[in-house]
Amino acid sequence: DAKTTQPPSMDCAEGRAANLPCNHSTISGNEYVYWYRQIHSQGPQYIIHGLKNNETNEMASLIITEDRKSSTLILPHATLRDTAVYYCIVRAYTDKLIFGTGTRLQVFP
Amino acid sequence: GAGVSQSPSNKVTEKGKDVELRCDPISGHTALYWYRQRLGQGLEFLIYFQGNSAPDKSGLPSDRFSAERTGESVSTLTIQRTQQEDSAVYLCASSRKLQGAAEKLFFGSGTQLSVL
Image (cartoon, rainbow over all chains, first blue to last red):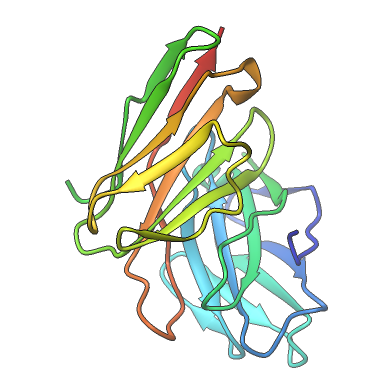
């Protein structure tokens, strides 16, 4: 079973920041938070991951609360090509990646 | 190629026939995963390989499903006596699986299986 809770859908205006929340209140100390996205008809794409600290890469930023019970993925300047289903996953090293239902992000002009 | 390659991209078969789906992982990736995605639904884990052994087969839905992997290379997912409920996109992913490190999976584009 997925260990995360995400809103089923969100909208964002092109050029604005998209903030996608994820609740993982039962996360264990050795579990990472991962984000993937799936654009229509493609395989999922890795975005970012973190353990305790906030992380940033060329695609996005990941903000993890101090108690690690929730996180937010930030796409700083959303484009139409960012329209996708975004999956938040918590996983320890030895575990398989379990995908939930994700958040369907619609970026509109 | 630089990415995970899956073949065929599309497969149409008749109910009761056997099918083989192939996955070529990224060179050097020791871990390989198979997932299934039915229309409009999320990804279901099927099986995981580390090298050519399969420590986790817990997601295989029935004994009609089997998979093998040759060394740290190609994997084949076989579905025997296909049923209409097997219709889905079958996705393969690979990773370097470094001990103790966070793992990034790279996915192929999948095989769309349609059972008539």
